[in-house]
Length: 204
Image (cartoon, rainbow, N blue to C red):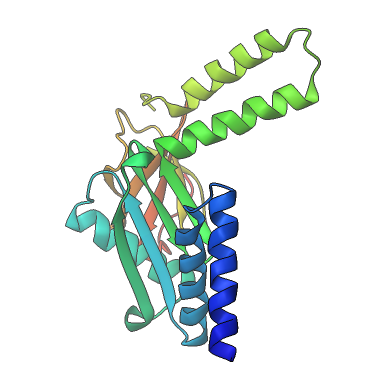
């Protein structure tokens, strides 16, 4: 009887997803289910979605970033890789319930949210100039600038100023020998995830 009820509930869920044209949500539901199962077993699941497969050095660095930031043992990290062309470029990292989105699609969604906020907070008068300013600002944030000293460090992320021609996904080596990978390029600085503890990294 319990099995029959479960089948009915699954059918109801599928029908509801179909009715709302939301079958793609099945993947999210499955990921959440697996994350809950991993938590019960004391494991941590990380899913790396990419458009172009990362290099071995990048992969090793990402795994090191997760292990150090979340304090998980190597044997308890469940690491998955998925190709996702919809990201356009870059990659997205899901660790448990935390998402690190360094994809072109993520940036476009950020811009969309920014424009939506402008539309909701302002009247139609002057809104075109506000949207134009937002787009110009967004372009500045996304450009590769001649922008090395450590401006700030925390939570496994370093903000660096003074590095010329930094490229997205490029490996950066600090004086201490610790490595990082460029994940965010801003107008006057870059953001890197650190491969390791980063305990020797100081501001300045």
